[in-house]
Length: 310
Image (cartoon, rainbow, N blue to C red; front, top):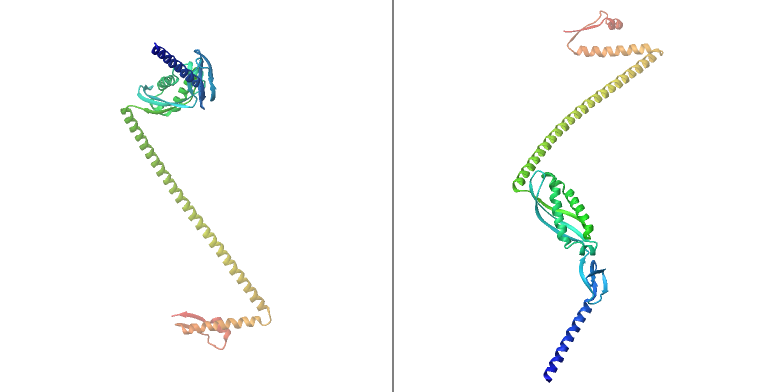
């Protein structure tokens, strides 16, 4: 009987120990340290009570509990590849990434079961609908349009879900292999066309530049020749003017000298001297000279003397 009493006491001690541990665990669990950029949604007896922000908080054990923990930092969600048909019925594979952030922890907890999965599904359906309105060539050019449309649709849904969609980026748009090969051929043909056009334009410009250069050279040469002739004519004119001026000055000086007493005799003597010098030169040359009968009459000699070559 003593053994039974000891067993009962031991059992009671174990029970109280378990109760104490549970109470201690609950009291410890009631102390919440919420980190930065996080939010704890607290329920009291199954009903929403409050949202705990960053810092130290104490809850009532067995009454309050943290039902949801929401991360308030911006996060990325990969949108898996999906097949879409363009307006010209070409099947392309599209994938992307969403950048979202929880702005209302309560709506993110109670407004939808899984906002990440919902945002991904909505992004896929919106992408399919937008690509269905575009031709294949435009799908590569209108990525911004597709992204803007997805963000617009997700923002409307995000008001209910308590999230904000910052942006949606398309990572890849992959067409079928046959279409890809055809597009590569088209791109190569376009590059060759541009190369030929650029070469022809370059050759045209080169010819224009050469002709402009030749034209400018000929103009410069003609202008240079014209200026040279003008300069030569002006120089010749100045030379003639100078000679005429010098000749006039010389004649004027001779006239003044003649008008002086004995001037005529001096001039006559100078002319006779020059004539005799000329006669001296003729006598040395192979020339016949006819002289007057009276060699002493120098005046008759000067007036009648002539020269002939044999």
